[in-house]
Length: 129
Image 1 (cartoon, rainbow, N blue to C red):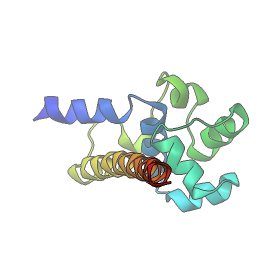
Image 2: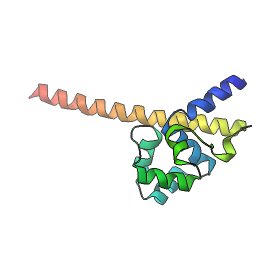
Image 3: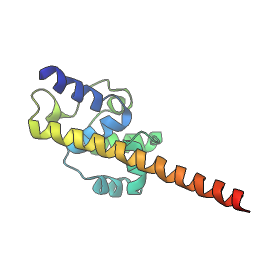
């Protein structure tokens, strides 16, 4: 069980988006609260958390400050991790991490489906003309 827990913990921190989610949750900040503090749309933050885009350096510095982590930890995972998720993590925290990860993946899939639907409609209208 410990190996599985460690794998989930590592996969959550494997990308900038995963580290961003992890740091945000460690501070008990909702996505909309963080977006508001950064002055960005919630959809922009969702894109960062699901690794569909990345924040500019100025926003990255703001993120690090708000989330109380080093910018290098957000970028590449080097340095001190968010304090309350290190070491002996509770089952509730692990479940929350997995839900956040799956939610981000679901958003990515939904976006891809939407794009494919638009492409299909365009193709069908082109062929019907």
